[in-house]
Length: 132
Length: 313
Ligand SMILES: Nc1nc2c(ncn2[C@@H]2O[C@H](COP(=O)(O)OP(=O)(O)OP(=O)(O)O)[C@@H](O)[C@H]2O)c(=O)[nH]1
Ligand SMILES: [Mg+2]
Image (tube, rainbow over all chains, first blue to last red; front, side):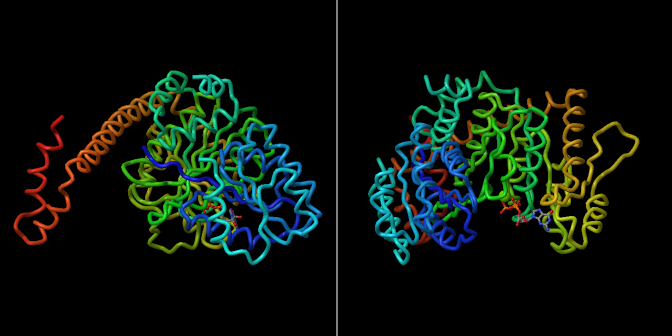
Protein backbone atom coordinates (compact mmCIF):
# COMPACT_ATOMS: atom_id res chain seq x y z
CA UNK A 1 0.00 0.00 0.00
CA UNK A 2 1.27 3.45 -0.89
CA UNK A 3 1.47 6.12 1.76
CA UNK A 4 -1.36 8.62 1.76
CA UNK A 5 0.00 11.85 0.28
CA UNK A 6 -0.97 15.18 1.73
CA UNK A 7 -2.87 17.19 -0.87
CA UNK A 8 -2.83 20.93 -0.43
CA UNK A 9 -4.40 23.68 -2.47
CA UNK A 10 -3.13 27.23 -2.63
CA UNK A 11 -5.77 29.69 -3.73
CA UNK A 12 -6.04 33.40 -3.95
CA UNK A 13 -9.57 34.70 -3.84
CA UNK A 14 -10.35 38.23 -4.85
CA UNK A 15 -9.21 40.39 -7.67
CA UNK A 16 -5.77 41.61 -6.71
CA UNK A 17 -3.22 40.57 -9.27
CA UNK A 18 -0.34 39.43 -7.14
CA UNK A 19 0.64 35.84 -6.55
CA UNK A 20 4.29 35.83 -5.60
CA UNK A 21 3.58 34.85 -2.02
CA UNK A 22 1.19 32.13 -3.11
CA UNK A 23 3.78 30.67 -5.47
CA UNK A 24 6.50 30.69 -2.81
CA UNK A 25 4.34 28.78 -0.36
CA UNK A 26 3.20 26.37 -3.08
CA UNK A 27 6.80 25.49 -3.89
CA UNK A 28 7.73 25.13 -0.23
CA UNK A 29 4.88 22.68 0.33
CA UNK A 30 5.92 20.71 -2.73
CA UNK A 31 9.48 20.55 -1.44
CA UNK A 32 8.06 19.23 1.82
CA UNK A 33 6.64 16.29 -0.14
CA UNK A 34 3.05 17.43 -0.60
CA UNK A 35 1.00 17.51 -3.76
CA UNK A 36 0.06 21.12 -4.27
CA UNK A 37 -2.77 22.22 -6.50
CA UNK A 38 -2.36 25.78 -7.58
CA UNK A 39 -5.38 27.44 -9.14
CA UNK A 40 -4.00 30.83 -10.07
CA UNK A 41 -5.47 34.25 -9.55
CA UNK A 42 -8.99 35.62 -9.52
CA UNK A 43 -10.97 32.64 -8.38
CA UNK A 44 -14.48 33.02 -7.05
CA UNK A 45 -15.29 31.35 -3.73
CA UNK A 46 -17.51 28.94 -5.64
CA UNK A 47 -14.68 27.92 -7.98
CA UNK A 48 -12.31 27.44 -5.04
CA UNK A 49 -14.81 25.25 -3.21
CA UNK A 50 -15.49 23.25 -6.35
CA UNK A 51 -11.78 22.65 -6.99
CA UNK A 52 -11.28 21.68 -3.33
CA UNK A 53 -14.09 19.16 -3.67
CA UNK A 54 -12.89 17.55 -6.90
CA UNK A 55 -9.24 17.47 -5.85
CA UNK A 56 -10.18 16.03 -2.44
CA UNK A 57 -7.67 18.21 -0.64
CA UNK A 58 -6.56 17.95 2.99
CA UNK A 59 -5.35 21.54 3.37
CA UNK A 60 -6.45 24.83 1.86
CA UNK A 61 -4.13 27.82 2.03
CA UNK A 62 -5.82 31.09 1.30
CA UNK A 63 -3.63 33.96 0.36
CA UNK A 64 -5.07 37.01 2.01
CA UNK A 65 -4.15 40.56 1.22
CA UNK A 66 -6.50 42.57 3.36
CA UNK A 67 -9.36 42.31 5.78
CA UNK A 68 -11.60 43.66 3.07
CA UNK A 69 -11.84 40.09 1.83
CA UNK A 70 -13.55 38.75 4.93
CA UNK A 71 -16.76 38.03 3.06
CA UNK A 72 -14.89 35.89 0.52
CA UNK A 73 -13.46 33.67 3.25
CA UNK A 74 -16.80 33.36 4.91
CA UNK A 75 -18.28 32.28 1.57
CA UNK A 76 -15.53 29.71 1.07
CA UNK A 77 -15.95 28.28 4.57
CA UNK A 78 -19.69 28.04 4.11
CA UNK A 79 -19.25 26.36 0.74
CA UNK A 80 -16.88 23.78 2.19
CA UNK A 81 -19.35 22.95 4.92
CA UNK A 82 -22.21 22.60 2.48
CA UNK A 83 -20.17 20.22 0.33
CA UNK A 84 -19.31 17.98 3.24
CA UNK A 85 -15.72 19.22 3.24
CA UNK A 86 -15.66 20.71 6.72
CA UNK A 87 -12.69 18.51 7.66
CA UNK A 88 -10.35 20.49 5.36
CA UNK A 89 -7.73 22.39 7.33
CA UNK A 90 -7.98 26.02 6.22
CA UNK A 91 -5.09 28.41 6.77
CA UNK A 92 -4.87 32.10 5.92
CA UNK A 93 -1.71 33.94 5.08
CA UNK A 94 -0.72 37.49 4.24
CA UNK A 95 -1.23 40.92 5.73
CA UNK A 96 -4.17 40.39 8.03
CA UNK A 97 -5.21 43.18 10.37
CA UNK A 98 -5.10 41.96 13.98
CA UNK A 99 -8.74 42.91 14.56
CA UNK A 100 -9.93 40.66 11.69
CA UNK A 101 -8.37 37.49 13.06
CA UNK A 102 -11.14 36.63 15.55
CA UNK A 103 -13.74 36.92 12.78
CA UNK A 104 -11.74 34.72 10.43
CA UNK A 105 -11.31 32.10 13.13
CA UNK A 106 -14.96 32.20 13.91
CA UNK A 107 -15.68 31.55 10.24
CA UNK A 108 -13.61 28.36 10.57
CA UNK A 109 -10.12 29.34 9.50
CA UNK A 110 -7.78 27.33 11.72
CA UNK A 111 -4.83 29.66 11.81
CA UNK A 112 -3.44 32.76 10.18
CA UNK A 113 0.18 33.50 9.41
CA UNK A 114 1.44 37.01 8.85
CA UNK A 115 4.02 38.05 6.28
CA UNK A 116 7.52 36.92 7.13
CA UNK A 117 6.37 33.66 8.71
CA UNK A 118 8.86 31.01 7.68
CA UNK A 119 7.52 28.33 5.39
CA UNK A 120 8.89 25.77 7.89
CA UNK A 121 6.51 27.11 10.53
CA UNK A 122 3.55 26.72 8.17
CA UNK A 123 4.58 23.21 7.11
CA UNK A 124 5.04 22.16 10.74
CA UNK A 125 1.62 23.57 11.57
CA UNK A 126 0.00 21.59 8.76
CA UNK A 127 1.67 18.33 9.74
CA UNK A 128 0.70 18.79 13.40
CA UNK A 129 -2.89 19.72 12.73
CA UNK A 130 -4.06 17.37 10.00
CA UNK A 131 -6.52 14.78 11.23
CA UNK A 132 -4.69 11.47 10.97
CA UNK B 1 -20.24 0.01 -0.84
CA UNK B 2 -22.25 3.18 -0.47
CA UNK B 3 -19.50 5.45 -1.78
CA UNK B 4 -19.45 3.57 -5.10
CA UNK B 5 -23.21 3.84 -5.50
CA UNK B 6 -23.04 7.58 -4.89
CA UNK B 7 -20.20 7.98 -7.38
CA UNK B 8 -22.13 6.03 -9.99
CA UNK B 9 -24.95 8.49 -9.51
CA UNK B 10 -22.48 11.31 -10.14
CA UNK B 11 -21.82 12.69 -6.66
CA UNK B 12 -18.63 14.73 -6.97
CA UNK B 13 -17.65 14.21 -3.35
CA UNK B 14 -17.97 10.45 -3.78
CA UNK B 15 -16.03 10.46 -7.07
CA UNK B 16 -13.26 12.54 -5.48
CA UNK B 17 -13.00 10.27 -2.45
CA UNK B 18 -12.95 7.11 -4.56
CA UNK B 19 -10.13 8.57 -6.63
CA UNK B 20 -8.12 9.32 -3.48
CA UNK B 21 -8.72 5.79 -2.26
CA UNK B 22 -7.63 4.19 -5.48
CA UNK B 23 -4.70 6.52 -6.08
CA UNK B 24 -3.29 5.73 -2.66
CA UNK B 25 -4.06 2.06 -3.12
CA UNK B 26 -5.88 1.99 0.19
CA UNK B 27 -6.80 -1.51 1.38
CA UNK B 28 -10.04 -1.91 -0.54
CA UNK B 29 -8.97 -0.31 -3.82
CA UNK B 30 -8.94 -3.53 -5.82
CA UNK B 31 -12.36 -4.49 -4.53
CA UNK B 32 -13.57 -1.01 -5.47
CA UNK B 33 -12.19 -1.22 -8.99
CA UNK B 34 -13.78 -4.64 -9.47
CA UNK B 35 -17.19 -3.18 -8.71
CA UNK B 36 -16.57 -0.07 -10.79
CA UNK B 37 -15.34 -2.01 -13.79
CA UNK B 38 -18.76 -3.34 -14.78
CA UNK B 39 -19.87 0.25 -15.37
CA UNK B 40 -16.97 1.29 -17.60
CA UNK B 41 -16.32 1.28 -21.34
CA UNK B 42 -18.76 4.00 -22.31
CA UNK B 43 -16.55 7.09 -22.18
CA UNK B 44 -14.44 8.23 -25.13
CA UNK B 45 -10.85 9.01 -24.14
CA UNK B 46 -8.71 11.82 -25.54
CA UNK B 47 -5.00 11.97 -24.73
CA UNK B 48 -3.03 15.22 -24.97
CA UNK B 49 0.72 14.91 -24.79
CA UNK B 50 3.58 17.27 -25.58
CA UNK B 51 6.47 19.18 -24.03
CA UNK B 52 6.23 21.40 -20.95
CA UNK B 53 4.54 24.70 -21.63
CA UNK B 54 3.38 23.78 -25.13
CA UNK B 55 -0.19 24.76 -24.25
CA UNK B 56 -1.75 21.38 -23.43
CA UNK B 57 -3.87 22.68 -20.55
CA UNK B 58 -5.09 25.62 -22.60
CA UNK B 59 -6.04 23.28 -25.46
CA UNK B 60 -7.74 20.85 -23.10
CA UNK B 61 -9.70 23.77 -21.67
CA UNK B 62 -10.87 24.89 -25.11
CA UNK B 63 -11.76 21.43 -26.41
CA UNK B 64 -13.55 20.58 -23.17
CA UNK B 65 -15.46 23.84 -23.42
CA UNK B 66 -16.65 22.89 -26.93
CA UNK B 67 -17.66 19.44 -25.73
CA UNK B 68 -19.68 20.98 -22.92
CA UNK B 69 -21.28 23.43 -25.30
CA UNK B 70 -22.35 20.47 -27.43
CA UNK B 71 -24.01 18.89 -24.43
CA UNK B 72 -21.44 16.26 -23.43
CA UNK B 73 -20.40 15.68 -19.85
CA UNK B 74 -16.65 15.90 -19.44
CA UNK B 75 -13.93 14.61 -17.16
CA UNK B 76 -10.34 15.85 -17.16
CA UNK B 77 -7.29 14.11 -15.72
CA UNK B 78 -4.24 16.41 -15.62
CA UNK B 79 -0.90 14.84 -14.78
CA UNK B 80 2.22 16.70 -13.66
CA UNK B 81 5.57 15.25 -12.61
CA UNK B 82 6.31 14.40 -8.98
CA UNK B 83 9.77 15.04 -7.59
CA UNK B 84 11.61 11.72 -7.37
CA UNK B 85 13.40 13.06 -4.28
CA UNK B 86 10.64 14.48 -2.10
CA UNK B 87 7.58 12.92 -3.74
CA UNK B 88 6.01 16.38 -3.83
CA UNK B 89 4.42 17.85 -6.93
CA UNK B 90 3.17 21.19 -8.14
CA UNK B 91 -0.11 20.57 -9.94
CA UNK B 92 -0.77 23.75 -11.88
CA UNK B 93 -2.88 22.74 -14.85
CA UNK B 94 -6.00 24.28 -13.38
CA UNK B 95 -4.49 27.72 -13.86
CA UNK B 96 -5.18 27.44 -17.60
CA UNK B 97 -8.51 25.70 -17.28
CA UNK B 98 -10.56 28.80 -16.90
CA UNK B 99 -13.30 28.45 -19.45
CA UNK B 100 -14.34 24.90 -18.74
CA UNK B 101 -14.82 25.43 -14.99
CA UNK B 102 -17.77 27.67 -15.74
CA UNK B 103 -19.72 24.63 -16.99
CA UNK B 104 -21.48 22.16 -14.79
CA UNK B 105 -20.82 18.48 -15.24
CA UNK B 106 -17.09 18.93 -15.59
CA UNK B 107 -14.86 17.05 -13.18
CA UNK B 108 -11.16 17.92 -13.13
CA UNK B 109 -8.62 15.93 -11.18
CA UNK B 110 -4.89 16.70 -10.98
CA UNK B 111 -2.48 13.82 -10.42
CA UNK B 112 1.23 13.65 -9.64
CA UNK B 113 3.23 10.99 -11.45
CA UNK B 114 4.39 9.63 -8.05
CA UNK B 115 6.43 7.01 -9.84
CA UNK B 116 7.56 3.54 -9.07
CA UNK B 117 6.41 0.13 -10.27
CA UNK B 118 4.21 1.36 -13.10
CA UNK B 119 2.10 3.31 -10.65
CA UNK B 120 1.32 6.22 -12.95
CA UNK B 121 -0.36 4.21 -15.61
CA UNK B 122 -2.34 2.16 -13.13
CA UNK B 123 -3.56 5.16 -11.13
CA UNK B 124 -4.35 7.06 -14.30
CA UNK B 125 -6.34 4.27 -15.86
CA UNK B 126 -8.19 3.68 -12.59
CA UNK B 127 -9.09 7.36 -12.27
CA UNK B 128 -10.32 7.31 -15.87
CA UNK B 129 -12.51 4.31 -15.07
CA UNK B 130 -14.05 6.02 -12.08
CA UNK B 131 -14.95 9.06 -14.22
CA UNK B 132 -16.23 6.76 -16.96
CA UNK B 133 -18.44 4.83 -14.53
CA UNK B 134 -19.70 8.12 -13.09
CA UNK B 135 -21.10 8.94 -16.52
CA UNK B 136 -18.53 11.24 -18.11
CA UNK B 137 -18.92 10.87 -21.87
CA UNK B 138 -15.56 12.35 -22.83
CA UNK B 139 -12.45 12.14 -20.69
CA UNK B 140 -9.44 14.30 -21.56
CA UNK B 141 -6.05 13.24 -20.23
CA UNK B 142 -3.11 15.66 -20.15
CA UNK B 143 0.44 14.40 -19.71
CA UNK B 144 3.87 15.89 -20.23
CA UNK B 145 5.83 14.00 -22.79
CA UNK B 146 8.62 12.25 -20.99
CA UNK B 147 9.85 8.90 -22.23
CA UNK B 148 7.86 5.84 -21.34
CA UNK B 149 4.97 7.71 -19.75
CA UNK B 150 3.94 9.43 -22.93
CA UNK B 151 3.82 6.17 -24.83
CA UNK B 152 1.81 4.48 -22.08
CA UNK B 153 -0.63 7.33 -21.81
CA UNK B 154 -1.04 7.44 -25.56
CA UNK B 155 -2.02 3.79 -25.37
CA UNK B 156 -4.65 4.63 -22.77
CA UNK B 157 -6.47 7.04 -25.10
CA UNK B 158 -8.82 6.35 -27.99
CA UNK B 159 -7.58 9.44 -29.81
CA UNK B 160 -4.04 10.61 -29.07
CA UNK B 161 -3.24 14.24 -29.74
CA UNK B 162 0.43 15.21 -29.90
CA UNK B 163 1.11 18.88 -29.26
CA UNK B 164 4.24 20.65 -30.42
CA UNK B 165 5.26 24.29 -30.75
CA UNK B 166 7.60 26.34 -32.92
CA UNK B 167 11.00 27.31 -31.63
CA UNK B 168 12.17 24.08 -30.08
CA UNK B 169 15.00 23.58 -32.54
CA UNK B 170 15.29 21.77 -35.80
CA UNK B 171 16.20 18.34 -34.56
CA UNK B 172 12.79 18.33 -32.91
CA UNK B 173 13.64 16.32 -29.83
CA UNK B 174 10.02 16.71 -28.97
CA UNK B 175 8.75 14.71 -31.89
CA UNK B 176 10.56 11.49 -31.30
CA UNK B 177 10.15 8.45 -33.46
CA UNK B 178 7.89 6.67 -30.98
CA UNK B 179 5.50 9.54 -30.68
CA UNK B 180 5.10 9.86 -34.43
CA UNK B 181 3.58 6.42 -34.50
CA UNK B 182 1.33 7.10 -31.57
CA UNK B 183 -0.11 10.44 -32.59
CA UNK B 184 -3.43 10.36 -34.40
CA UNK B 185 -3.81 14.10 -34.52
CA UNK B 186 -0.87 16.48 -34.50
CA UNK B 187 -1.25 20.01 -33.22
CA UNK B 188 1.23 22.81 -33.74
CA UNK B 189 0.17 25.23 -31.03
CA UNK B 190 1.40 28.79 -30.55
CA UNK B 191 1.01 29.24 -34.29
CA UNK B 192 1.07 32.98 -33.60
CA UNK B 193 4.81 32.51 -33.24
CA UNK B 194 7.33 32.40 -36.00
CA UNK B 195 8.20 29.00 -37.42
CA UNK B 196 4.84 27.25 -37.09
CA UNK B 197 4.63 26.43 -40.80
CA UNK B 198 8.11 24.98 -40.66
CA UNK B 199 7.08 22.63 -37.84
CA UNK B 200 3.98 21.60 -39.80
CA UNK B 201 6.11 20.78 -42.83
CA UNK B 202 8.54 18.77 -40.74
CA UNK B 203 5.82 16.73 -39.06
CA UNK B 204 4.15 16.04 -42.40
CA UNK B 205 7.47 14.89 -43.83
CA UNK B 206 7.90 12.44 -40.95
CA UNK B 207 4.40 11.05 -41.28
CA UNK B 208 3.81 8.09 -43.51
CA UNK B 209 0.96 9.43 -45.58
CA UNK B 210 -0.72 7.24 -48.15
CA UNK B 211 -3.32 9.46 -49.81
CA UNK B 212 -5.08 6.57 -51.48
CA UNK B 213 -5.38 4.21 -48.55
CA UNK B 214 -8.50 4.27 -46.43
CA UNK B 215 -6.42 4.23 -43.26
CA UNK B 216 -6.58 7.27 -41.00
CA UNK B 217 -4.56 10.20 -42.38
CA UNK B 218 -3.08 11.98 -39.39
CA UNK B 219 -3.95 15.66 -39.69
CA UNK B 220 -1.52 18.38 -38.65
CA UNK B 221 -3.43 21.35 -37.26
CA UNK B 222 -2.16 24.80 -36.40
CA UNK B 223 -3.71 26.33 -33.28
CA UNK B 224 -3.44 29.43 -31.16
CA UNK B 225 -5.06 28.05 -28.04
CA UNK B 226 -5.08 31.32 -26.14
CA UNK B 227 -7.07 32.99 -28.95
CA UNK B 228 -9.22 29.95 -29.70
CA UNK B 229 -7.60 29.80 -33.15
CA UNK B 230 -7.84 26.45 -34.92
CA UNK B 231 -9.66 24.89 -31.98
CA UNK B 232 -12.81 24.26 -34.01
CA UNK B 233 -10.74 22.42 -36.58
CA UNK B 234 -9.11 20.35 -33.85
CA UNK B 235 -12.52 19.53 -32.42
CA UNK B 236 -13.84 18.47 -35.82
CA UNK B 237 -10.85 16.23 -36.40
CA UNK B 238 -11.30 14.60 -33.01
CA UNK B 239 -14.89 13.80 -33.94
CA UNK B 240 -13.80 12.55 -37.37
CA UNK B 241 -11.24 10.23 -35.85
CA UNK B 242 -13.80 8.92 -33.40
CA UNK B 243 -16.21 8.26 -36.22
CA UNK B 244 -13.45 6.54 -38.18
CA UNK B 245 -12.62 4.25 -35.26
CA UNK B 246 -16.26 3.39 -34.68
CA UNK B 247 -17.03 2.72 -38.32
CA UNK B 248 -13.97 0.61 -39.00
CA UNK B 249 -14.43 -1.33 -35.76
CA UNK B 250 -10.89 -0.31 -34.85
CA UNK B 251 -12.12 1.13 -31.58
CA UNK B 252 -13.03 -2.35 -30.40
CA UNK B 253 -9.63 -3.66 -31.51
CA UNK B 254 -7.84 -0.83 -29.71
CA UNK B 255 -9.77 -1.39 -26.54
CA UNK B 256 -9.11 -5.12 -26.57
CA UNK B 257 -5.39 -4.47 -26.86
CA UNK B 258 -5.70 -2.09 -23.94
CA UNK B 259 -7.41 -4.71 -21.81
CA UNK B 260 -4.65 -7.19 -22.65
CA UNK B 261 -1.98 -4.70 -21.63
CA UNK B 262 -3.80 -3.88 -18.44
CA UNK B 263 -4.04 -7.51 -17.34
CA UNK B 264 -0.33 -7.96 -18.04
CA UNK B 265 0.58 -4.78 -16.21
CA UNK B 266 -1.51 -5.65 -13.16
CA UNK B 267 0.14 -9.05 -13.02
CA UNK B 268 3.62 -7.54 -13.40
CA UNK B 269 2.94 -5.08 -10.63
CA UNK B 270 1.67 -7.78 -8.32
CA UNK B 271 4.78 -9.83 -8.97
CA UNK B 272 7.05 -6.82 -8.53
CA UNK B 273 5.40 -5.93 -5.23
CA UNK B 274 5.60 -9.53 -4.12
CA UNK B 275 9.32 -9.67 -4.88
CA UNK B 276 9.81 -6.38 -3.06
CA UNK B 277 8.08 -7.71 0.05
CA UNK B 278 9.85 -11.06 -0.06
CA UNK B 279 13.19 -9.31 -0.34
CA UNK B 280 12.41 -7.38 2.81
CA UNK B 281 11.52 -10.61 4.58
CA UNK B 282 14.60 -12.44 3.39
CA UNK B 283 16.53 -9.44 4.61
CA UNK B 284 19.96 -10.54 3.46
CA UNK B 285 20.40 -7.94 0.73
CA UNK B 286 23.00 -6.03 2.72
CA UNK B 287 25.06 -9.17 3.27
CA UNK B 288 24.91 -9.93 -0.43
CA UNK B 289 26.01 -6.41 -1.26
CA UNK B 290 29.02 -6.87 1.02
CA UNK B 291 29.87 -10.16 -0.63
CA UNK B 292 29.61 -8.64 -4.09
CA UNK B 293 31.67 -5.62 -3.00
CA UNK B 294 34.44 -7.97 -1.89
CA UNK B 295 34.09 -9.65 -5.30
CA UNK B 296 33.38 -12.98 -3.61
CA UNK B 297 30.32 -13.29 -5.78
CA UNK B 298 28.48 -11.26 -8.43
CA UNK B 299 24.99 -9.79 -8.84
CA UNK B 300 24.02 -12.43 -11.42
CA UNK B 301 24.76 -15.31 -9.10
CA UNK B 302 22.95 -13.50 -6.29
CA UNK B 303 19.77 -13.57 -8.35
CA UNK B 304 20.16 -17.31 -8.87
CA UNK B 305 20.48 -17.71 -5.11
CA UNK B 306 17.53 -15.44 -4.34
CA UNK B 307 15.10 -16.85 -6.83
CA UNK B 308 14.22 -20.05 -4.94
CA UNK B 309 13.80 -18.03 -1.73
CA UNK B 310 11.49 -15.52 -3.42
CA UNK B 311 9.50 -18.21 -5.18
CA UNK B 312 8.90 -20.10 -1.96
CA UNK B 313 5.53 -19.65 -0.27
N1 LIG C 1 1.53 32.84 -27.64
C1 LIG C 1 0.82 31.78 -27.28
N2 LIG C 1 0.83 31.38 -25.99
C2 LIG C 1 0.10 30.30 -25.65
C3 LIG C 1 -0.68 29.60 -26.61
N3 LIG C 1 -1.27 28.56 -25.97
C4 LIG C 1 -0.88 28.61 -24.69
N4 LIG C 1 -0.05 29.66 -24.49
C5 LIG C 1 0.61 30.05 -23.22
O1 LIG C 1 1.64 29.15 -22.94
C6 LIG C 1 1.79 28.96 -21.54
C7 LIG C 1 1.72 27.49 -21.19
O2 LIG C 1 0.41 27.03 -21.47
P1 LIG C 1 -0.19 25.74 -20.77
O3 LIG C 1 -1.54 25.49 -21.34
O4 LIG C 1 -0.08 25.86 -19.31
O5 LIG C 1 0.85 24.65 -21.29
P2 LIG C 1 1.03 23.14 -20.81
O6 LIG C 1 1.56 22.38 -21.97
O7 LIG C 1 -0.22 22.64 -20.20
O8 LIG C 1 2.16 23.29 -19.71
P3 LIG C 1 2.59 22.20 -18.62
O9 LIG C 1 1.35 21.58 -18.05
O10 LIG C 1 3.36 23.00 -17.62
O11 LIG C 1 3.46 21.21 -19.33
C8 LIG C 1 0.70 29.80 -20.90
O12 LIG C 1 1.24 31.02 -20.50
C9 LIG C 1 -0.30 29.98 -22.00
O13 LIG C 1 -1.07 31.15 -21.86
C10 LIG C 1 -0.69 30.07 -27.96
O14 LIG C 1 -1.34 29.49 -28.84
N5 LIG C 1 0.07 31.16 -28.24
MG1 LIG D 1 -0.56 21.87 -18.29
